[in-house]
Every structure is written in structure tokens, then in C-alpha cells.
Image 1 (tube, one colour):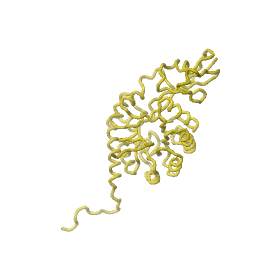
Image 2: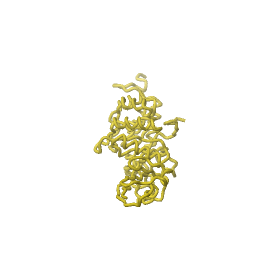
Image 3: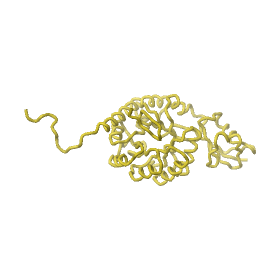
Image 4: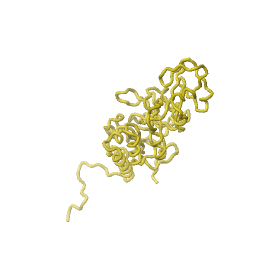
Length: 66
Length: 251
């Protein structure tokens, strides 16, 4: 199935979890937050939340600003 | 102690810093230290695996409380999602709410800001909204449960100072939450003026991070905020059109 992670298209196996999607970008779990299709997925649910075809995954962190 | 209290939390420093515009994390670190700030904003963006270092490490080392903002959001919906992601990533329910109307002026959109503020307050956030220098909107946001109001002095990064000091005074007179002058500060006298007008704190970034000597400007801003606060508390003399002798006129 196809998902986008931070705007980039990825082909991933069925059953891929949010945690696996995050690990394509970083090993960090602190200071990072995830939204799937504009809904926050809390850290405790990353391992148990499976992605669906065409999901949009956003992995955010804090940067300089404001 | 003359402490700043926001949402029940106390701060000895009345200078809130932003982190945007610094040429490096090292320069930012030194500027933050020189400013004496205890509360500093960060933005939320897509994670870039190639980015060196993190602004969060700098803040943690300096024991500065992090204040995530919703910079870059144009709608209430975007801002609410960004605030929730910041809460998840950073473990804070504080948010500087920033919903801009357009990229040319970066002026805050009052309608979207108010909508987002109501939703975030209902969701348990400590909301500090960035707004125009509009006394009516400031009052409405306070009534909506915001922990502070943050009127601009002038557009973000403009360095134009406080374009409408009278409106800032009107906001201060009516507010019972802290008023934080946000955006437009160009140099130390602007920060001092904000405090003399009765603001409870000043938030600035560009004036320091893009100064030729950021660390020195940060130290100047720290002193300016302190001086302005003291002058406000001391009570300035009234302005007069003509001289009033300070020495006896007749021998």
C-alpha cells in the first residue's frame, strides 16, 4: 500500500504501524509528535496503530521559530 | 519579588524570547543566556533527519521553559492540530497561538485566532494569543479564558517599534491577564517603552537574533525590560508644554 510520510510517497507492507513509519525518519521518540490524516496519534499508540492505504503521516518536532 | 505570573506559573524575567533567525544554535544559546529569559518559543515543523542539533537541547540545558507556537498556521483548524502535536511532542499544554492572515504582512487573523483560542481553552491549553493592537479583541480573548494577550507593536520582524502606543495602553488598562508586547521590537528603547506603557512582559526574537551582535543586544534587551518596568512602577512625571523650574528662580 502507499502512504505519504512528511509529504514523501512510500510504498509499505500492509500492517505497517505508525511506529515503523516514524522509524523511517528517526530513532527518537521524545520531542516528536505524529498526526495521521490530521489527527494526533499519541506516543503510546504508535506500535498498535496500523496505517491504511493513502494515509498521510506527519512527523513533527520543534525547530527554531517565533 | 516582582514576578511575572502566567497561568499560575511564576517567572523572574519579563523578557520572553523567540528562537527564529539565529545564525546558529551556538549564537542562539549565548543570546538566550545573556537575555536572562525563562520562557522561549519554538515552532513545530516536519522532522528533518539531516538537521544538526536541536533547539530543544539548548533550552533544556539552560532550564528555559519551552513555549511552542503555531507559526505558519492560516486557519483555526491548523492551529489547533499544531498545538495538540506540540503538546504531544513537548509535554506542555502551553501554546503561543499564532494564526496569520497572509504571508506579506504576517498580521494575525482575528477571526481564526478567536475560534482557535476557544477550542484550545476548552481542550485544557494555557493559551497566549498573538493579536493585533486591538483592545476589543484583547478583552474578548481574556473573557474566552486566555492566560495572557500578546498584542503586536508592529509586524513580525519589521523592527518598527510600537506603532500605536495608545492602543497598547488601552489594552493594558482593561486587562486582568498579563499583556505581552509581541512583535515589532527593533531595539532596546522599544522594549523599554512597552514596559513603560504598562505591559507585563515583552516577547522578541529578530531584534536579537539578527542584530550584528546578538549576545550584546540580548543583554541590552534584558536591561531595557528591567528599566522600563522600574520606570512604570516609579510613575513618570506628566508631560508639560512649558518648562517647570527645578531650581528656585529667585535668589
